[in-house]
Image 1: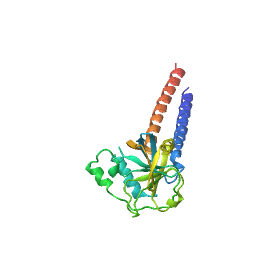
Image 2: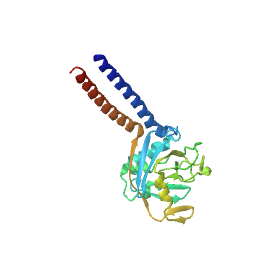
Image 3: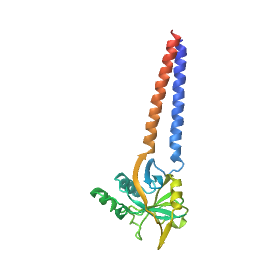
Image 4: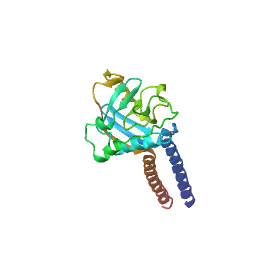
Length: 234
């Protein structure tokens, strides 16, 4: 009987290990398809739905560090998309002047910083995040665009620093909104507000989820072994 219990326990452990491997593969495959994409995620909760994106830390490290810090400080809360040009870009306004809420001193200090132009060979295609700037290549601050189509004329001219991971349905909603033209800009008639933002890390979230699942399965397997033990020695 003791041998039977040992076989049951061994089989349970093997199943748990296989489940853990499968769970890990599933957790990482979401972003492993793009070798540039890191594990940090940012979500913009807009008046038309959520938009989630990740960063390319090895492509534009300084840009990623700057934008991510602005997010963590809450600088994009109450900001808006001032430009929506269907098939081209949806552009987030600079947080200085773009927000409806006032900024505190720390937010202002970070928002006034600019970053060096980190131009790369990554192509401007739908879903890509591209840093806004003026004629000075090192003038990027907090405005950036999400590509709504392929724009090869931007390649090597603007810093690509991430891409959309969820929310293409929200972008398509934005593309259907009425617009007006002001010079080179196609702008939405209504304000597309970024109501709030939050961020998380895919790796950390996955690890916590895996640990929770493993703890539950280990508890269940321990109960199963105990039931077998009582049955065999009853």
